[in-house]
Image (cartoon, rainbow, N blue to C red; front, top):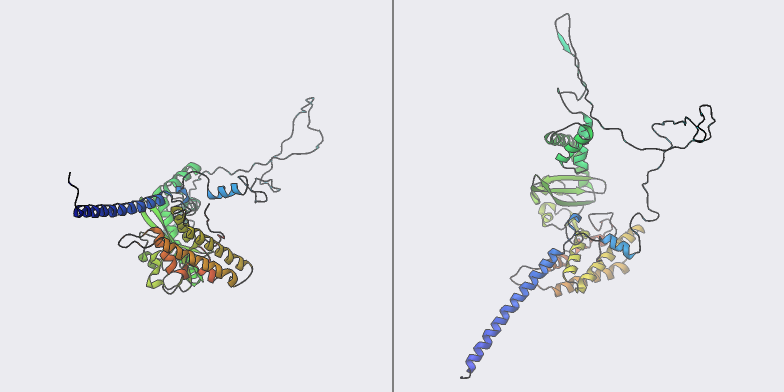
Length: 418
């Protein structure tokens, strides 16, 4: 068999080299797909915007921390208790006297009192719907005119539900978030009244209309507040996804329901346009609109923390990610400690090293996750670019202590890796 020529060997090597390049590109693509699939499978309420109800069964982060600290489940020593306690002012007292001696059987009618023991039962009266009929009598005057008695306020139909059932329906649906159909079932089971789902929906709409004035007043106060928290979340309405937009402070909250998550809904909400304080939000691009440029923007630390935790889960060997989480956490703690001490700023000796650690971690992350020309960038790369390009929004809480770290101002410690 003839030996291959030089040109044939060169062609074979070139062909193999091309094949190797194709395989390397395929491997790179498959690795990226595996990483993305692992990221999706690993999503939970701590590293994404998924609600806690979607988390897999198992020990929660709080329970794991509890075990590490050696604490037992349940109320901890010194915690506030809610046990049922005896009252000195019962609503009703029922006396029970023994009729005969439990020893010899003698009559005890004239026996002397030697003490009493009390047992209290806390209960609610049976909630039964009562039907009250209002009869409006008519009288004919000698002049021939017939006059009908005036109905009490609110009694304006031949048959209707009263204010207490209306209030209960509104409370169940609006405050307790009970679905309309289940609210109707609950009222029927507990009271015997059987309102329809249409009637309950009508009550909610009527009450909402009565709140136009207070809602406008709340929005006015929100626009005047120095710090404003804005967010949006999806809700299911008759099988269709809508968006509930929220604007709030620690004392005031306004809601706006809309089919859109975008600027048309935010504009219609009419709180953020023209606002001149600090708006804390989840960095959604909708808040970058020109109508909202009058505000100073801060990004919610809880959202950033979840994304960093997700990046660490996708690449457990990423030292930059652990460093970024630690720096972010320590800056949050330093801000709280400075506020508690009555200081206006974090001292430079504390803030400067932590901010340097943060910036260095982001730069290292960018180096470890280079851009992929002509391809969709990874979640981690996109996150790092946002952190690098918007440091002023990400770390505003550490530079201005009037700005909270998250949209949850009472949260003092951000979620950490467990």
